[in-house]
Length: 251
Length: 235
Ligand code: HEM
Ligand code: SF4
Ligand code: FES
Picture 1 (cartoon, chains in turn orange, green):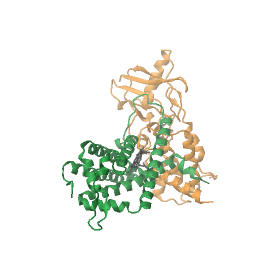
Picture 2 (tube, chains in turn brown, green):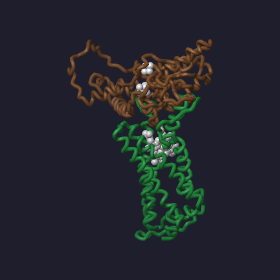
Picture 3 (cartoon, protein in one colour):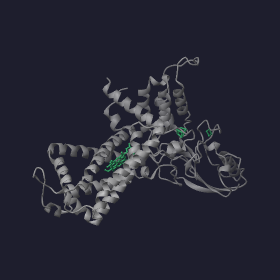
Picture 4 (cartoon, protein in one colour):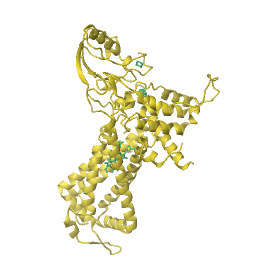
């Protein structure tokens, strides 16, 4: 396949970025999107130009490192697919593909297509864990958890923290990510004990880190490679209300 | 963890709660207001008696007015604060920004809301304070059949009002905007209050569309009937 690429180039966070046009020939339809970029970078290096910086790690859809807004949609807009799992056969020969970083002021661009998603780490540090020491793994069924509850928690835990939800949201809201973490831990008996404290702390940090407010567009869930449902946001809203009221009428 | 009222008034989720709760108050009001208006079709006596009853206790009337004003102000000021924060959270679009699935209603809440606010101001000046049309003050009083009480002739005023085509046009267009606002708002508020899930979303989305259309049809039936001459000027 031969393709035209419109790629965002930016030297540093404070610098002004701009789109640069590239052409790439003989791309295998079976290569992944990131392999196509690898190929482009090889050619750029050969020609003595600086390669395009982008993030990736596992390249099998589990780590959440790859990002990229492709043709205006984070991860390219194929249901339940990360950028690393997107294949070139999804495009047509001769297509022009626009590639941008995940856009949000809480995700500053470090270079080209690489953004700093440290805001997510701060949210996790605020309460995305269980404080007791859990020791080595317990015997199965020592803590009985009904199957539907375990299934829900498992679905919510599928979030890989990629940030596509924030990039997809026109308000740069992190509600889907934070909701997934809150809902995952607040659903399970091990996490329930600290439910109120966790919800309040994570939401406070989320607001602090400069993410926007949810307006129930639902764009986040549509872009999420792990198909995290909007239900997690409703659950977080509910848990937040309960925690706030308890905190006011409690001691 | 100790919380303060600031958790409710200053946080992102807290503000959404204010939005949803004030929206609910307005929703209830709009429905009752629409049902009240439909009494035009029951004739001059019915709607004038109803209007008089609403005015009968100044304390209750002003209580309601302040309550509605407070809900409106909370709704509008919170909306402004949310939108400003959201603009700050998002850099200007550079490439082609796409919407994948957000509805037109959800994307235009700020626009429809602002126009509805302008409409509310106009509407109050038009029919409540009656400064846009001083001639409404000249309408002869109506004598209620039962109590022989002299009351303001709302029936005649409404018909006079809607016989002006541009007035009717403004009302009809603004009710269409309200309909659009509600087709997102009514479902969205359940999500905001944390009482919606994937299964219920479909039903609540339908409810929102039905609610929006009921409100729209209910309100515009009056100006349309007046324009078609279906409501006789004096009953
Ligand atoms: C006075 C002018 C109004 C303005 C400026 C306004 C503005 C807005 C905005 C910007 C939102 C979106 C909030 C968001 O998406 O996060 C919203 C939501 C909403 N509005 Fe309004 N609105 C107005 C009037 C009304 C009226 C008259 C009603 C009811 C009859 C209403 C009912 C709602 C509801 C139910 C929501 C959904 C709340 C939620 O998502 O939780 N609004 N409004
Ligand atoms: S909720 Fe989905 S889109 Fe958001 S960070 Fe998690 S996996 Fe990525
Ligand atoms: S590189 Fe790990 S999810 Fe894409």
